[in-house]
Amino acid sequence: MKLLLLAALVSVAAATPQYVRGSDVNARTIKNEFEQAIDNSYRSEVETDNGIVIQAQGESLPGPEPETGSMSMSGTYEYTAPNGQRIRVDWVADENGYRATSDVIPQQ
Image 1 (cartoon, helix red, strand yellow):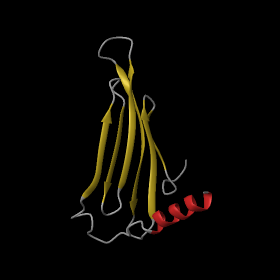
Image 2 (cartoon, helix red, strand yellow):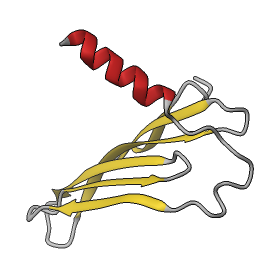
Image 3 (tube, rainbow, N blue to C red):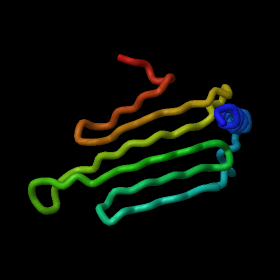
Image 4 (spheres, helix red, strand yellow):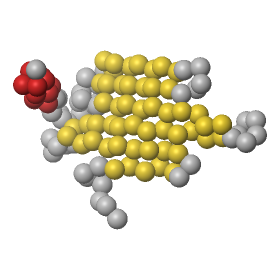
């Protein structure tokens, strides 16, 4: 079973589209899902035919007074850079601001 899963993952990675200059001009959305729950949490996933993948989820955090509070959100986005490198960025946005991590973002 593990070997089958590994083979499937390798197949998906090998099928990842390569960047073609100008390909984003005519990119089509091939997946666009959005779910919002009764508690105002949400989940979103978007994918284009040129290899861009965006996933996000979040929840509403109530404040002490009506019409106050905040959102806590997190997600990832992936794309192929012009040099062919696959880029992935993981991010969080909450009361502490926006924070992104990636192999291509310099660490402080």
